[in-house]
Image (cartoon, rainbow, N blue to C red; front, side, top):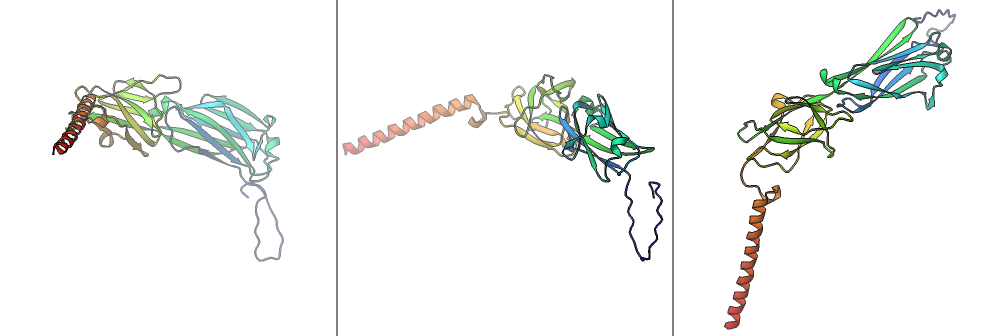
Length: 302
């Protein structure tokens, strides 16, 4: 046996199947989402499957990259729907991880394949954009053996390019960023031409384009709203949607927003044209009324 058990079996049968009563424990880690932007909360789940009648303690060590902040009071430990009593383990935490040691007296009581489920939350922070991903590793130690599992959660960037119809870069435009459902995503300025998604508590700023880059978004559909157009150009009245699908939108894949010049039609909010068309409509109606009146007078005179 790989676990060190020795079995002597006397039988007249041609074929028999022998299964070990106990097995090596295993560990598996999953996350609530496959991609996450700055400021998002991710729920992680660690599942330890007991080997049965353990003669050692189980030590679970969780280690995150600096791009994740542990929410320490979110850690929950259960078997089925029942919380594991705090007397059965010891726990220590850091800003980016924790260690839980289950007592041998407790692990010895666990039947083979019993699942200890550890769940907790972590928040993606601005350091996640340094590598465009966050990594979360778990180790399970029992005796002299260690087994591991890992979850990697990426984030993405996009480039916003403001041009005219001739594809010339325009400056002076301002934008706000929204989710597909219309929730504003605040951003902060990192350096000239570079923005990132804001964390909780940070005050957002407008995006000034040009040609700029916005970092730290999950895959998904977003929308840009132009709040100020370049001088001499018409402001867009509809939000422009774009989708990040597992890759940065940079270079040839950049999000390009085009402004035009000329008269603005009524539905685009051009007040000069609206006024002109309103007066024109009144004149047409007045002329029509006058024409009908004259025709009626003409018939009466006949």
